[in-house]
Image (cartoon, rainbow, N blue to C red; front, side, top):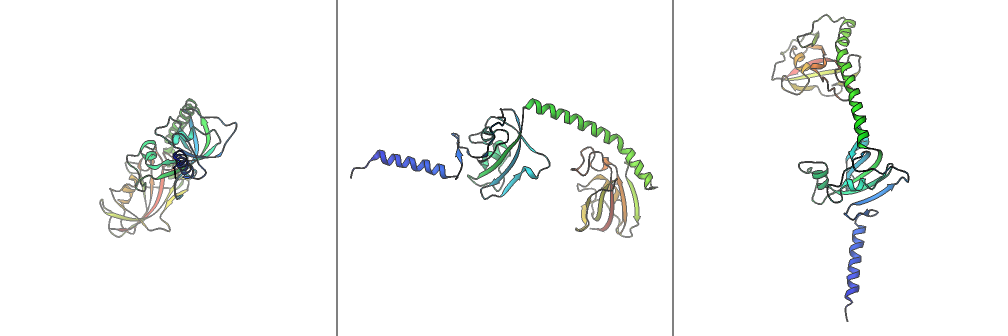
Length: 295
């Protein structure tokens, strides 16, 4: 029987097309090979231009739905400058399809994303050959870069003013606390107040030894920001481990069984950087500490 070569070729081509379309069900594909699915679209939404700063809700996950990053769990929104695509079918090609208020899912090669877009020196250990990542994105805000930079400059100016104010007021805050709590001891040369509550009778804390400590940390207005209560005592090597300097200086004055309060100026704590939302820059701290052992 004579074979219809044209028909066979057409069937083969159709099979290839159907295979490509069905690889990721419900997704469309750009000419560059980016798989995308638009979930919601805004008729009147602003279309971002190259160089605009986009504020996004972004979740990216593996093919089996293990979440890698979720901007909704972060204290600050996820922002990205819309750039020209850095490789075929990258995240920037996908974001350029969206307008303000739009949401979509993009499927990207994991290795290209990490090495090119994210700038990792090597891919994370969990990334396998030909692994794909799913990016769920929603455009929350679009700002021209010039406007964004102007707003950031103003924000920086306000932050610097706040820092200067906090730095200036810290000595007065400490002095008022000392007076109101009738603290009679004098600070050491670095400003640390060591207030002994119970004299220890055991071994003395020495540099290089592992100190075992129960503690509670508060700001001077009484807000607790950290505590060992309900947990195992904290262990650190005196003079070596990365705890605040006020601890190294204060615990060095203790013996096992002793209890004390350490009134620590910010210069011996978290300084001008602070620590998260609970410890602002130039915040003096108070620690109740008990030295329960030395190893």
